[in-house]
Image (cartoon, rainbow, N blue to C red; front, side, top):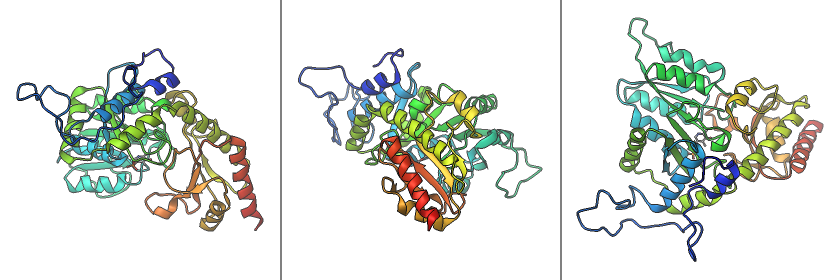
Amino acid sequence: MTSKHTGDGTRAVRAGLPEPEAYEPTLPGPAFAAHYHLPGDADVHQGPYTYGRDANPTWTRLERAISELESPDADAETVVFASGMGAISAVLLSQLGQGDAAVLPSDGYQLLAPLGERLRGYGIEVRTAPTGGDAQLALLDGAPDAGGGPHNEHAEPQPVKLLWIESPANPGLDVCDIRRLADAAHERGALVAVDNTLATPLGQRPLDLGADFSVASGTKALTGHGDVLLGYVTCRDPGLAASVRAWRKMAGGIPGPMEAWLAHRSLATLQLRVDRQARTALALAEALRERPEVTGLRHPGLPTDPAHRVAAAQMRGGRYGCVVSFVLPGQEHADRFLAALRLVDDATSFGGVRSTAERRGRWGGDAVPDGFIRFSVGAEDPDDLIADVLRALDEVSMK
Ligand SMILES: *Cc1c(COP(=O)(O)O)cnc(C)c1O
């Protein structure tokens, strides 16, 4: 356990690791067991490990590590999943039931919309509004869905059971005031979950801002090498943690031990990666601001960004994330730009040590212009990376 007084880098290096023991590895290797030897009938319910779908020592270490990062000042519990979507669906499906209402962002991760449709099919009322301007606030009291759809004026609005926030939102990078929304939701008896994927726990601590659940894809910046899929849910309320854990046991979306071990290995460099990537992302955004062909430039760290004021108040250490989004004049321009880049791979996902970029519109799941680029800044030298981007833009403009 690291002390609450240590800095983020120290905490990231030591989080969740066992006390040093002579001739034992710093991070013991993954445990692949399906079942464990039991002591007989007496202590079977007290013991930590019985069957591999319930718990395993490799997850336990990673779960402690993430809890220390998400909530260094208060006890918290983490439940790890096979992917970010495993974690997200576990919260939604374990907390919501027929007749409940939930508020989701309309500009969140692209699978939230189809998942919301599925929830509607289960008899859950789903209201959606954009992240920016705290627009979800109005829906807590049963305002009509901002996305349209039939609204029965005479029906008594359903009280909201769960507010889902994604801030900064992927890929549009809008930000909302988490504390303000969480307070409003709690006044109405609703639970609050925040997707913390983009910020990472070093960039934002949703539980400190009032959220009940901090949920994330560990596939992105948390692990940072594009070599593992993972998700997690962290909460302080033991009852909520238990309900998410029970869901994992029933639905079975468990991470492989190797993935959990790899993820834990990667946490040691989290602060180095996040700081470097955030600084370079801001420098890239500043450089793109000078380009006439670039519109719709967004990065929460840019002082001129509409999200900057709120982001600066609730995000930590100048860590506004590694993503810069912007719009080029049309699909062809964007495709040629991506092809002209030499240090940047055309790939989806974000947060890795290798820079990647993609024309987000190719997936069809996000409401973005054809020329919309989501750029994920890696750990390359900032000068090299920015020079590569500016050269690629020049090449496309000259043709
Ligand atoms: C990628 C992502 C997810 C989904 O995570 P997976 O690990 O791919 O399942 C959820 N939320 C956000 C914000 C993401 O970027």
